[in-house]
Amino acid sequence: MGKQLWLIRHGETEWSRSGQHTSRTDLPLTEEGEARARVLGETLRAKTFAAVLSSPLRRAFDTCRLAGLSPHAVLDDDLREWDYGEYEGLTTASIREQRTEWSLWRDGAPGGETAAAVGARVQRVIERALAVNGDVALFAHGHLLRVFGAVWLGLPPSDGRFFVLGTGSISRMGFERESRAMLEWNRQC
Image (tube, rainbow, N blue to C red; front, side):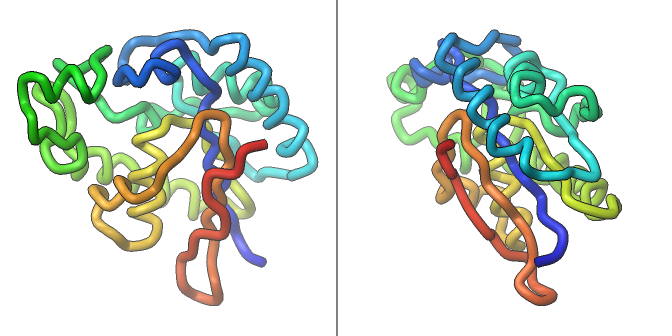
């Protein structure tokens, strides 16, 4: 089947539950998020990974740890969530009270990042993962992994808006012959 990159979104936090944009704020997992991370581990333990990369943020690394893969994990700053700048902690609805037509995917965030900037970070992660001889597990965040899916497929980073991704989910990127392909998206374990 060829090399695969397993994208694992962290478990639920209070802010992911409420829809608040969470990038730099280092929140813990909820009890439900911890339980889902352990369930992820049941699926992931059956798989051998040549490398495990994780965002250094607590919610991603705790998901990695609870899934049983932290002893092999390397922290990677490029896997941090999209920087929401001044919109950190706000919901889309509250932002749109001031900017009615705002879209993170088109407009980015003041004092934060654009889709293109996140796409550049994702591209570096892809290059590192492709250099590994074997499958790679990546523990990260919702918007970043949605950008990852788009960039992997050769789409603009902003096309990540088309890929819905729940907390505590697994997605797999790989190849169909020589072409990059999405093998699975947003599997809830």
